[in-house]
Length: 215
Image (cartoon, rainbow, N blue to C red; front, side, top):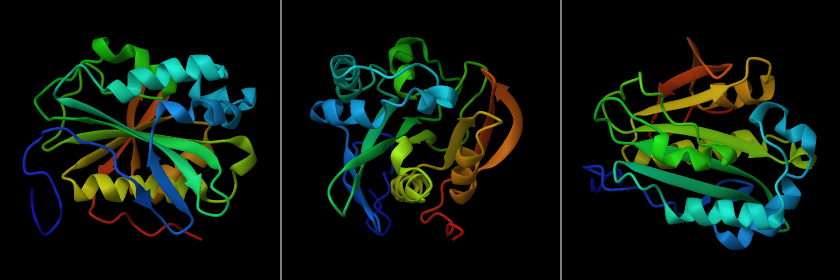
């Protein structure tokens, strides 16, 4: 580990840690979060862009058990956090990153079960760039949207990833999802001309500190 930056000098797995921000704390995902998160994600309209449908607490618990168990691929790390408000302690959504070692093409066949929670991974035709690559995603419950929570949480996660050696960020965003595009922009990503499953691929460098979000 680089003592000055905390970055991993080799890819040996990424373990989520609590990430504090001004108004939030990103807590590593736990199975115990399933019941409250089922309520956070219960609005069917929330799934217009992320796909799927609201899950029951039992279904979400089973999904979280798989995610917490981690990827079966030693070159891939699943990092998941729930977003908790400092004021009141309520959960409001989640952020996540699939961190992949840069050793050529990356496949996702073994991890398709995680897609329901947002992991999409690199496609088989896209070789990873130099250094670890993180595909990131974020979702905030309907009642907490419009407050900058997604941007603050995503930027907190991006800063954490950059300090631990991630070099490249990637996200896939529906072309009509303007709010998500704004979050990606605040994290330093820009759209490319690559499409995947009806979404635009956004990419950018993972700086040690993300660029300031616009007020």
